[in-house]
Image (cartoon, rainbow, N blue to C red; front, top):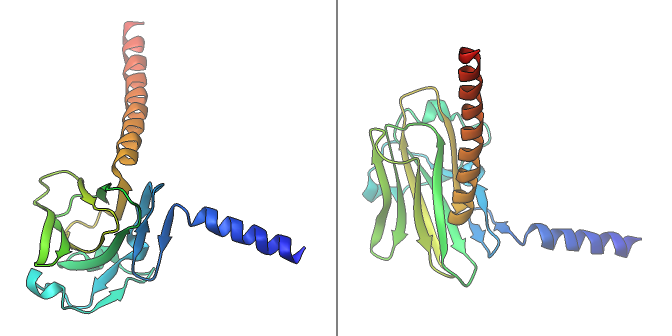
Length: 193
């Protein structure tokens, strides 16, 4: 019985870790990667309003579960996370920040020459999601800069496989189309009768 339980535990462990693996401050992608919520893997800068040149030298602390995002994000706040592509293929990644309109936010990636801009959005211009890619066996540290003045937001940064994200968006759009189309149909049907 003891060997059966340990064998079962090992099999479950390998099945569950085959999609995505986590370490303390690194997220690993493997072949079957779909989507990861980053909120619990973020590190936040202990100093507010540091410049782009200073951010990589700043101290970062693990973001606690009771982190007050609505209060903290009123000032410019920096977050850090590390992604590693453990697969042997290029991963096309979609980054989303949640159902919010930030005053500005930007994602930077470490390069040999310093930080490079993955994307930058100011004054609510641009999309809530952006695509980038990671080469096979690449490890990169990303810095997310946010600033938000509105109290009504849902901060939920995620990284998704690009094809998974597109499929998910298409399903959501189909459901919305059927729902609102049904409401319009019922309205027109009631007006005619």
